[in-house]
Image (cartoon, rainbow, N blue to C red):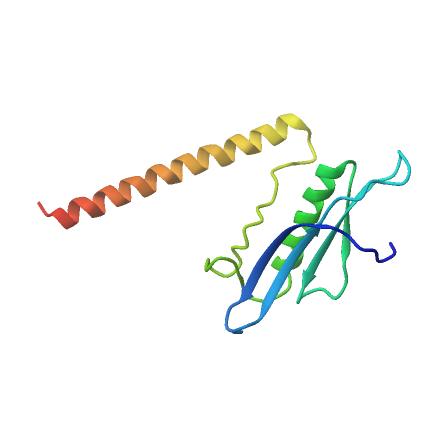
Length: 141
């Protein structure tokens, strides 16, 4: 696709651990409507400081194009080999979760979502129990 101007709709700045002053800037552009009804929407995604060119993620509509742009950014950041940080989190925690979807239809997607929800609740209960025990130990017998 020919390089063209685009309107930035979202920006996120990342640091590289151990490289003071180095920054990677994720810019996601406004989705571009296809010229024909049968064409794909495209969403510009640019990782300034990592990829030299604007990439274009595709989707059947504007929302899917944005989701594809975020998935592209996640993949590029995860696979660049740099210890990228965001908001002081541990390297690799870039705040771009992968969507839960699968190749087996809605029933499978819902099953995966329920597994994630159940595991999140279970771990939350474990953390709460550990914190409660720590507080009890600090108070003493």
